[in-house]
Length: 264
Ligand code: PEP
Image (cartoon, rainbow, N blue to C red; front, side, top):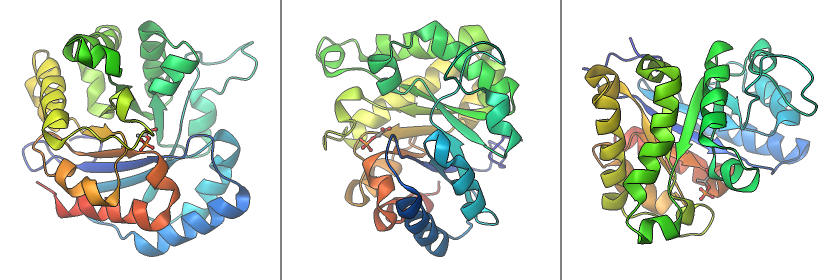
């Protein structure tokens, strides 16, 4: 049984996760969460989540209690405990109910120098604590134009699979996020997204076919209500990791509806 609750042969579960990044305030979060709670209904095979900044996680947990919307963090330490000023461990997150954590977002890799081995260590730390990592992979524009997309994505993914073992993907999601599409308004075309998603699934399948078939692979990069359906309709696109549009209740809810409407 896959963590998202469906056996692989039945149907791949969908997940739409919002990445709030460093946005929010108590008042704005309250309004956004209340609107999402009112709008999103539990649907078999469709998961929703919001990944909020650390200080707001308790608020998110409290407001979302009893709703079908899960919540997560945007980062986690690769260490379990110790003298790591400013860091937050997986156990701390798990202790008050956190479910997901984003690891290896391109902003962490690019702005904070997170390396492939460090991302792999964070992925494993998250799982040790009982969290479900959403592992981000994706190429820059320069890498795409050089024809290096597959090589970059393979390097990022293999770093985690080599360190954690393929069995670890039973409790994880992958998010393909081309860096050139994040926050830019430029979205990968459905066929560009499908091409990389298929490649990611094939990489996992080389190690374990069943796990690959059940693995949720999300697309991220300027997903909006008007492009979500086309993207989610692609065979290997199982939902989305949503930045800007996750801050607007109607937009995020419409993207969740698109995921539910394209259940395969
Ligand atoms: C993201 O930050 O993961 C993201 C996909 O952002 P946006 O949807 O704003 O491009």
